[in-house]
Image (cartoon, rainbow, N blue to C red):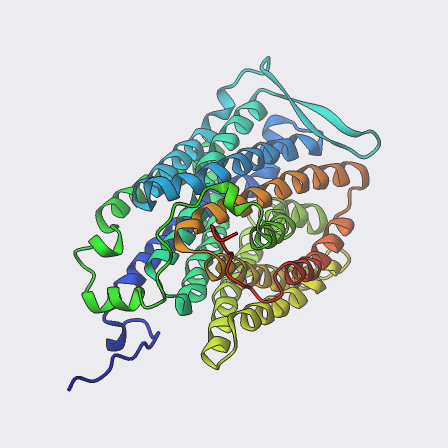
Length: 458
C-alpha cells in the first residue's frame, strides 16, 4: 500500500514533487526589477532634467508623469484581456519588448526641437483644470513615457496570471510577494546605477542602457517558459501539486460578467486609492529629498537604497503573514484582511514625513510606509485569485490596474499643482498616511467574507 502524498508548501520539498515553479517565480522577479528600473530612471533624473531643459513650472514634470499614467490606464485594461487571450508566454514577451524600446527612446528626447509643442491638461491651484504646454525635450519625454506606460501595463496582469497558473492558492501570496519584491529591487538598483551612468556618460545613456536590458530577459523567458501542462522540465508530481486546488469552471469569461460584481470593484477601488501613493514614492521622493534636505545626484543613492531595501522586506513579509495565518487554520478572508490591516496601520506615520527636521527620520518614516505598501499590495493582488477563477484573473487585474493608473493620473496632477501653489509636501504626505485604512474599510464593506464571484450563475 502506498503512502499518501502530503501537500507541504515548502519550496522544493519532496512532497511538492519539485521546485521548478519557483524558477518561474524568479523570472517574474527579474521582470519586475527591470520594469521598475525603467520606470524610475526619470524620477532620479528629475532635478537634472529640470536644469537641462529649464523647466520653471512643476506642472511640466507632472504632465510628463501624467502621460505615463494615462497610457498605463488605457493599456492595463487591454493588457489583462490580451494576456488571457494569447497566454503569458507570448503576451509577456511582447509587453517587455515594447516597454524596453520605449525606455531607451527617452534618451533621444534632446533631439526634439524647441519649436515642437504639446498641450497637456493639468491642475491649477486657483482655476482648477488648466492647459500646460510642453516644448522640445519635454514633448519627447512625454511621448516616450506614453509608450512606456503602454508596454509596462502588461507586467502585473501577466505576473499575477502566471502565479495563478503555476501555484496552488496556499502559495500564491508568497509567490506574489517574492516577485513583487522585484519592484523594490529595481527601485533600489536604479539610484545606484543611474547616477553613475549619468555622471560618466550623460543622462541620455542612463535611459538607453537601462532600457536595453529588457531584451535579454525576453530571450530567457521565451526559452524557459511554457504552460505547466506542456512544460518538459515539470515533473508530474509537481504538476499535481500545482493543480491540487479544485478545478476552475472551463468557461470563457467576458468583461461584462466581471464588472457587475462587488469583488471586482473591491479590488479596483483598493488599487485606485493606494496605487497612487506608490507612484508618489517612485516619482516624487527624489525631488522631496532635493527640495527639503538638499540632496543632489551624488548623494541621492543611499536613502533610496534604504527605502526600497526595507520595502523588499515588507513585500515578502506581507505575503508571508497571510500564508502563515492560513496554515494556522485562519480563513483566507481573516488572514488576508488582518495582514492588510497591519500594513495600513504601518503607513499612518508617513503623514509626518514632511514635518520632521531629521533627514534620517524622514527616510525611516517613508521606508516603513513603502514596506507596508508592498505588503498591502501582495495581499491585495492575491484577493483576485481568492475570488476569481484562473481564466478571469488577468482581466480582473487589468481592470484594477486601470483603476490604479487613473488614480495615478490624478496624483501626478495633484502633486504638481500643490507644489506649484504651496512649495510644500505636507498636504501630500498627510493624504498618503490616511488612504490605506479608508481603502480597507471600503474593501471590507464590499466583500465582508471574500466569497468567490458567481460568474455565469446569475
